[in-house]
Image (cartoon, rainbow, N blue to C red; front, side, top):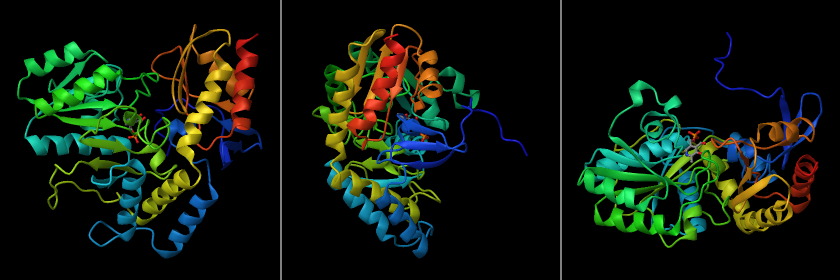
Length: 378
Ligand SMILES: Cc1ncc(COP(=O)(O)O)c(C=O)c1O
């Protein structure tokens, strides 16, 4: 059987990883400045993470959500403490799309309404409702398309007000990324966030904050939206949550009432996933990685800001968009092939997307800075 070819692949086959580095099957070493799409939060194969998973493997890996699972409780408590959302509850699932799918569904169960507002440039995943609120017609199949999903221009408060007025009483939720990742590291304005807070409360609309990419310390806060005075009704997480172990979750405000069977999953919150999730939170806390994210992020920004060809840098913590005066494809390819540094792209062809693990050191950052300098300054 062949693989169904949906990914353009680099000709690199990593067989080993440690910290911020990968090694391929030929023994070549690479710096990972992209974390496999923001997934590697605490570094590859962190010893505490490895030990937790190995120990858990020797005990129990999986049982369904029909039995007690103390690891889920421990994970929820630790997540509540580190994020400051102690009074929220946690629903565990397996991916970012699934987290958003459940959030959109929960909002609709809660207020009985059908329509959703999303933003231009958004990416919320590839499943049914999640892809319908993703601004990329190429990945929305006819089966997913519906006029119940309404697009609002990013940071356009006037349009948001107009859409709410035009669909008076029909909007169930608004979904927004803490920082747009796939869109090219695009930041929301304070005005937009405050308008969302006010308008959602006034119109019985659930505010869903997608922190799948921008959460877990990546932005220099636990959640990117914590830069502002706001508490969304639902917050979705995945990616960095398991440091490579597939898991996702929805943080749910106390105003939502749970009932048996309302949401569910076979694999979500299994023992191995919880062990991974707990290890990640312990490492973030014990190694002060949220502070490190801002420290190293601001170091990188200050070192590269005067390089030729850089038009602007959009950054929070270690979520960095480097806007070039030309498409970034060739530069990204040179970084990988000539300097062995993995970086990312985005829907904006000129933006190089940088998402290293948040325990990266200054010395490791210097490898990327030196490589970028040698390409852009020539
Ligand atoms: C902001 C955001 N939401 C949701 C998703 C979907 O996550 P997953 O691929 O785990 O389904 C992504 C993935 O890139 C994302 O960046």
